[in-house]
Length: 325
Image 1 (cartoon, helix red, strand yellow):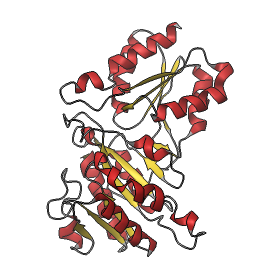
Image 2: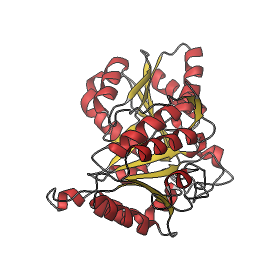
Image 3: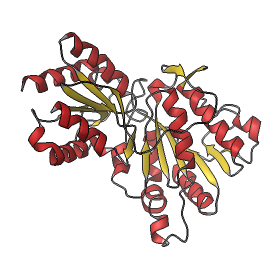
Image 4: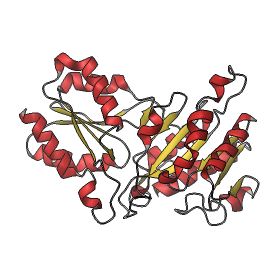
């Protein structure tokens, strides 16, 4: 099985999808000959032509509006927003058009073939306009699906599933792992289920939950916890919307403790939704309050990025606090 980094896995998934279905189109800012700012779309225009892989103007609302129109007419657009921080000009198109098109038309029309790819998160010294994690904004919107891979294997399988899913999907790619995460990825076509979390490690004392780039951080915290004699169960949520309540609840019923981590700010972050659901379903089984280890309620800083990010030491402190409660 060949080894790929996350960018290569994403490129491979796009290549497979475009080869299989002539309706699949790939477009965004600089995605053509340049291959995108991170090179995720390298050689796709060369292989499939300018009609199927092409550059757009620098107008995010226009990119998604154009994608909605294509999807409504039966195309399968894969639209790239160059950084997740730039997705907000397209917010109206996504939450008021993409998410509601099927509902508004009584299923006469839909834009379910649309996939929106965008790199998110910190770790690249990008400052406040290139480091945000906006997944929670969109998780509040019925009609969308949201997926976040943690490694190259997941990136390929989840992206292929997203492109073929009957609903519109926002695919958040953890950019600090683009080249840092390398692993075995099958060359053949495969899909991973959207809406199902993955238990990556079984344990008995405490449940740790995250997604995307935070999974690597959790693993480092688990090493510290296990040296302290704490048995950790680790869950990768993988899909923010819909999120796999049952897998998380089953784990917390076993361990009695939960630590949730994400890069986005604490207030209004998706960890709050998870915590509320878990306390509703697990209240009498909880041994300690649910802990959240998140980014800070400030704009993402440039020079203080390490202080801002929820690292393995912060997670380990939350584990110890939960165990000692």
